[in-house]
Image 1 (cartoon, rainbow, N blue to C red):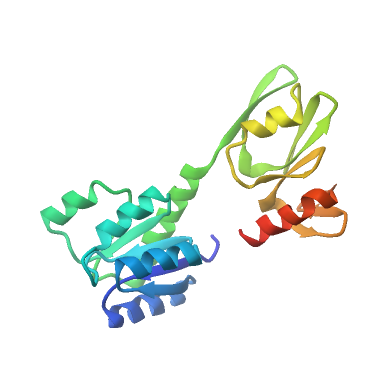
Image 2 (spheres, rainbow, N blue to C red):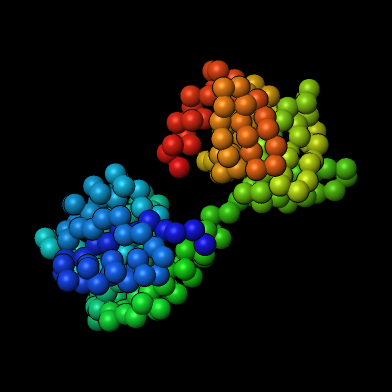
Length: 229
């Protein structure tokens, strides 16, 4: 599991410090914190954490449930980390979509376990599949495993980490079926998965298992997207 960048929304400085220490000891990165709704929302948009931990009781008029509602609108993942378990609060929480609810006081092991399970389930739910027909058989391919697409006349090669499929559709048609935002055109004949890129040189992109061309007209966008990941 990768080391997650985590943002903390909590109005008690001592608890913030405790959470930060616990996160570091468990291999996570605490990249910022806030004690109120407005600061938290601005920071989350700017810092783009992998995950946000939200206490319900915050400084100001708006609380953690209000923040969670805004993060739901922006499709940003979060966990509640709160001591509030009263019926009214839980009823409000039911109208939001957290990855989980960690009750204070927490243990370091419990914090790590909840975060790891929540992140695993989140990433699993984010997976998309491409259904193609190859040599008379239907294949359902996890998009994360696709390294790149390559045009071949009116056909298209779908190259994964382990297999190559020739599909009776154009590059444009196949690329439009992809749901993941990680795919970008690198050349008039190639669409590449940003997650598989190792490096970008003057005229080529090095992938985990291959090398493909990158055109001057597409290179700047590829590099820009890579920097934003």
